[in-house]
Amino acid sequence: MKSDIEIAQATSMQPITEIAKKLGIDPDDIDLYGKYKAKLPLRHLNKEKAMKSKLILVTAITPTPAGEGKTTTSIGLAQAMNRINRKTTVVLREPSLGPVFGIKGGAAGGGYAQVVPMEDINLHFTGDISAVEKAHNLLSALIDNNLQHKSVSLDIDPRTVEWQRVIDMNERSLRDIVIGMGGTTQGVLRETGFYIAAASEVMAILCIAKNIDDLKERLGNIFVGYTYGGEAVYARDLKAQGAMAALLKDAIKPNLVQTLEGTPAIIHGGPFANIAQGTNSVLATKMGLSLSDYVVTEAGFASDLGAEKFFDIKCRKCDYIPDAVVIVATVRALKYHGGADLKELKQENTKALQNGLENLGKHIENMKTFGFSPVVSINKFETDTDAEIEILAGYCKTRGVEVAVNESWARGGEGAIDLAEKVVKAVEKPVNYKALYELTDSYEEKIKAVATKMYGADGVEYSGKAKKQIRTIENLGLKNLPICIAKTQKSLSDNAKLRGRPKGFMITIREVEMAAGAGFIIPIAGSIMRMPGLPPRPSAEDIDIDSEGNISGLF
Image 1 (cartoon, rainbow, N blue to C red):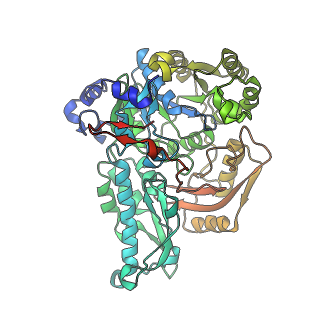
Image 2: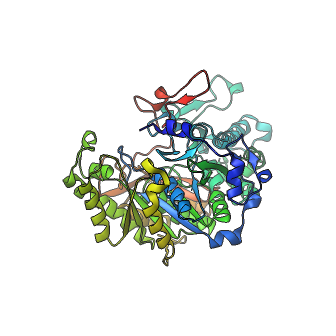
Image 3: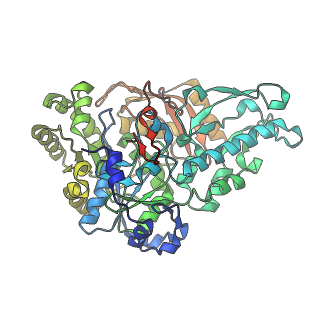
């Protein structure tokens, strides 16, 4: 079979104006970025229409190197929904360059369930993440400029400045740096560092903001540090929010592209779910619901991360809750969770599969905790045997949930018809949604609720630094915020080496950061970092471009 990029490049795309027409939008009422990409002005939002549409959330089991195909499933499902005459749009996050050039690769789907133009989507796209970088680093520059010029100084104590810089690249050497070296004219000497752009609070704000005014207010609420007198300093004190918002004037608009089958696709925002809230923007979701009868969207990584944050953070911000949930599972990944060696996953191993089913079981439980009976989508690979598929499907039935075999990677929308039909039935069933915690709960109660109910931990341990940071946040009057736990995606626990369904473990919170502008706090569990590094052999080594401008090596 052809590679993903070969399939994408062989596809005859429709002009983006034709995709806009499918959504009822006049071609003159979109902002064109070439022939196949466009920005959707916010005037297309329609709250009354959005409230009548159906929202489908796609999540997954704990990810493994074997892959689960959550984005592929989301795209294939949306294509299948349109094939059975349900007007559907898929709404996704934007890929960022760190994973593209690192180990994970792109995030445009795969096989015959992709969004296109995949090269553009994976590489820079419409410049949204670049705009996030610039807005974030503008605030960094304004902070250091205020430290330098005593005549206009806010008297900020540089030791208390918590605002890092960001770059859209995996670059471990920038995690901890010293700036201002070279003398008094070169700035104030201090320690700082970089996060990856996906972990920027500006990215989080972009994905939560309701409009430009809300965006500016949230940017102004970003916490910077303290004065020498102990007074809190915010971005608004530096008069930064106006210029930051100006840099984001186009980035706030959702992007319109298409799938290989011409299904409308809205792609906007790119926070990771292991270090941020892991969902596309509120505006993109509302836009999809405003323009379609059904929206298929995804939350990053597994249910313990992306889906939990979708329900406990995003649903509180956008006033919409899903009408159905899909959990993506693969035979290969479950065999890996059951102890099989990564090199042997193509071989039939029913024992390892049965051992790994507990991982899927936990994610089913997680969704039922929120009030949903999920549909399990088995993302089928060529090496899966009938016996293995039967075991997995049978397990789902014993757990009382619907299950469908999804072959959209190989067959596009046609391969997900059964899944689509079961999802259509699922959205008509009543949902008894309940958030995991109340906003009025203490932060320790919120963290414990997520750790015990979603991860399966016995409890939570805190470093002295984390306890102090929680008290500091509360003293700033920021008590009733949701939490966004940064934790490894590789395990239900905070230990990446624990596969399957770990038991008898504690979650360790080593520090807590605040995102006052975004409106949540970030407890950091275990050894997770907000600036990843590249693997020994990064994907960048395989990416190339020829003299005709054709890109190769993307996946």
